[in-house]
Image (cartoon, rainbow, N blue to C red):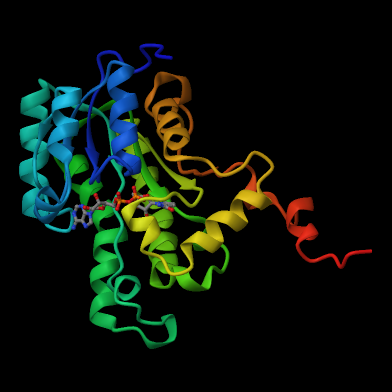
Length: 272
Ligand SMILES: NC(=O)c1ccc[n+]([C@@H]2O[C@H](COP(=O)([O-])OP(=O)(O)OC[C@H]3O[C@@H](n4cnc5c(N)ncnc54)[C@H](O)[C@@H]3O)[C@@H](O)[C@H]2O)c1
C-alpha cells in the first residue's frame, strides 16, 4: 500500500545490484511513495548486475560512481541535483564489501591491504558521501541519510570477519557526522541494523545459511526481509521521523534483545 509519504522528495540510492539487493527493494518502495531518485553503483556493478531494469521500472537515471572516489562522488552529486531539479532530501548508503570475506581469509590471518580496501568501501565511503553532500550544501533541511549495518558491530559473529569492524566504524561515522549535519543543516543521519538477508553480499558470508536460520528461530517476529527494510527506510526518509537522528535502529524482529528463545532451547533440551 502506498501513502505518498515521499511525494516531492528527491534523493540518491546507492547499492542496487540485482533484485535481491536491499537497495533495489528500497528503490521500488521509494518510487511507490512518490520519491524521485538517481541510482548509483560502482562501474563494475553496472556490468555484473541488472540496475538498468530497475532504472526503467522506476523512471530513474543511473550514474556510476565508485563510492570511495571523491571525484566520482562530486560529479554524482552535481549530476543528481541537476537531473532531479534541486537539492536532495534522502540518501541511502547500501554498500558493503570485504575482500577477506570474499577470499575466505580468516579474521586472525587478514591480508591488511584487503582489510583497508574493505574498510574504505564499507565504512570510509559513508564519510566521503556525506562530506561531499555537506560541502556542496546539497541536502535540503529536514533531509534524511540512512546507511545499512549489521549487529556484528556490537556482538561477535565469527564469520562476519572484518565486516564487523567496518560496521562499527560505519555506525560511529553516522553519529559523528550526524552531529554536524544536524546542527548545521537540520539533516538527520541514522543506520538501520538489518537481519541477515539473502543477497549477494549476505550470502558471501561463510555459514550464512546457519546464522539466518538461527536468527529466524531467535526472533519473536522472525527475520526482517529486504522488503521490511525498504519500508523502514521509507519511514526514515519521510517527514514522520524528523527528530530521529544519530541512532542505530534495529530492524531485526527483536533478535538484538533476545537471550534465548523456546525454539532454540528445544534444539538443546534432551528428550525427557
Ligand atoms: N544481506 C545481509 O544479510 C545484510 C544484513 C545487514 C546489513 N547489510 C548491509 O546492507 C547493505 C547492502 O547489501 P545487500 O545485502 O543488499 O547486498 P548487495 O550485494 O546487493 O549490495 C552491496 C552493494 O555494494 C555495492 N558496492 C560495492 N563496492 C562499491 C563501491 N566501491 N562503490 C559503490 N558501490 C559499491 C555493490 O555493487 C552492491 O550493489 C550493505 O551495507 C550490507 O552490509 C546486509
